Amino acid sequence: MTDIVSLDFNGSESERLNLDIEGWEGPLDVLLHLARAQKVDLARISILELVEQYLVFVADAKKLRLELAADYLVMAAWLAYLKSCLLLPKEEQEEPSAEELALRLQLRLQRLDAMREAGARLLARDQIGRDAFMRGAPEGVRVVKNASWDCELYDLLKAYGAISSRRTPSEYAVRRRPVFSLEDALARLESMLGTALDWTVLSSFLPEGVMDEEFRRSSVASSFVAALELTRLGRTELSQADSFAPLFLRKRQ
Image 1 (tube, helix red, strand yellow):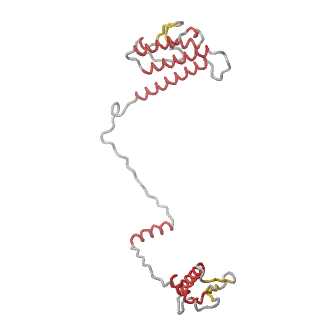
Image 2 (cartoon, rainbow, N blue to C red):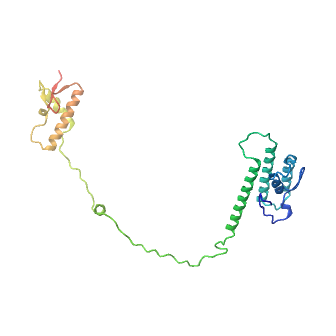
Image 3 (cartoon, rainbow, N blue to C red):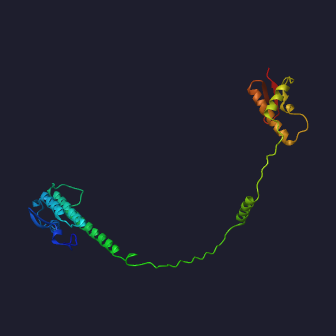
């Protein structure tokens, strides 16, 4: 073909699309080249006859290559577009001109030929199992590994502790602690409030006798919660002069 597109016609003449329409008689690719060079009157070319002959060409060709038919289809479509651009009134259009569109078509077809050529080169390369064969007993690659340890004292101690914890069976026994329950504190406060007629410090309601530190803390906490509960129920009254001052309690009158 001309400088617009280069097609590979290795087959018979039946693979070439020759047109016989009003205004042109000859190959389609030459018509497109002449139309780009403005050496043929596109207004006299019948697009309908062109389409009809293209359909007949595709239907009659028994061994037609699909890529060749696609190229001719693109050429015919661009030729129809060029003619439509000529028939439209001359107005300011943002679209490129017909000559620029034809140049774009040339570049696209050239790119298509380059891709086909690259694909053909790839398929023509030697293939394993057909042109080249692997060795029957391929040798393995010997890998030599040298470990390099980088750790600190914390990492060593952590690893040693993890191993030791797995080896040593862990037994946990819950030690029963002496506590003063909330139920006991409520019963003691209710029984002692009947005898106390005036404000009485809360520490006076604690259990008597020698107590260790843990049981004393439990007694203070339970008595305090019991006093709050009785005050909420409206049975007692609480009074405190200042922050962290002794807490006084009396029966509500």
